[in-house]
Image (cartoon, rainbow, N blue to C red; front, side):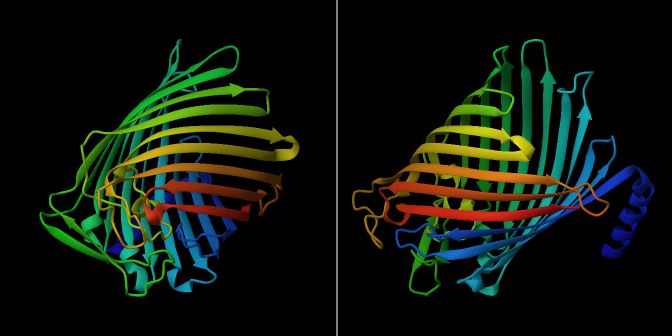
Length: 386
């Protein structure tokens, strides 16, 4: 059956080859991380990401197919190496005469595969989105919806449905100032049953599976939680090559509490380590972007976030929960900077080469022992587009 489907798809694509283009890219990024597991007991490691990408676009149609394949390896924790593949499509249709009015839709299928000791991180994921952008005489309006189904094949209690919808108003002025206002709604529901007990082996602090530490979460009801997001951004073009924005974002939980909690074993899965649906937040950020001559680009970003967790009790030390049931609170400061340079080649076999160097610093102050940490990451990479 799979071979038949493959042949049908291939036959359907052949007539379009003469009016389409196929692009390939390969890249390597290396990350020197001084606190790999975001722990109060830091462990340093070097992470490598080898990426292979393909994009198939039908000219003048707005339709494209893509596939991205990544191999992630650790220098000192090779048993944690894993693969990720992302296959999907995007399509854009014009609405009216304005180039800013269009309909966008797309979808993707993701797969993550880990080695045997950490196969509880394995998942497959389906994702789809649609959004509309309309340009009027007064402002630009955007609205959309996306849905995601993620299935943890060896951790079924955390498999979940995720729904998000948003509405945005974008207003520009002759002073090259733009104001963006956005509101959104999100809902996340887990595949849980009444009175489920989930035992998870974790590597507290150093991320190693010593078999001595376990977390047991007793789920008393089906997990379902919703939130509202509010965003305000002010952007200013300082010149033709310099832009600045400042932003405020607020996240409000509609539910009084949720039984789903984060886990302290961070393994390149932010959703398990610090799921946005487990906290409320006030976040303040700013970014400066500078485009220099000959395709040099510099980006500097800073962020401060005040997080208030809905039902997660703080750890007073490495093994004990707060005896007064104090909820977890985090104050996170982060800084990000990158410089990149693109060389346009335009040869028969190669289009461009891009180099980049980045630095990320995070200081997470928490009243819960396992989430009070600092983290610095230096990275560099090269991407070749064919």
